[in-house]
Amino acid sequence: MIMRIWRGITSKEQADAYLEHLQQTALPALRDYKGQRGAWVLRRIQGEQCEFQVLTLWDSLKSLHAYAGKQPERAVYYDEDDKYLLDMEPLVRLYEVADTIPPQA
Image (cartoon, rainbow, N blue to C red):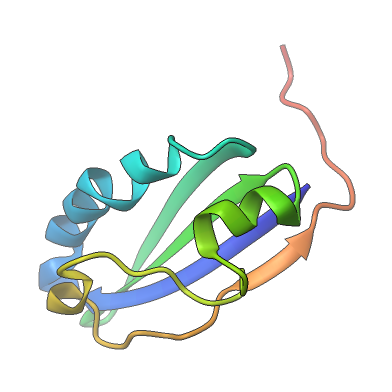
């Protein structure tokens, strides 16, 4: 499995609006891709900015290619992302999932 980690930064004032934007654009779009195994949106306020990290889990690089194209390490942006984000980072981080601990029942 592959974990894809994207990072974006908004102003503190835009944090709630950007989360809503993610919930209306990127997150629903991810549901359409075979091999996508979940997404987590993390955020933290630091001073006047809010950092977001979106972690997505994929079966393989092949399944990730369907979403991100031939260069899966390239960031994928949606319409109006530039309205919220202070910087449009061009790359994401990809990690092979080496081990997991399942949740307790």
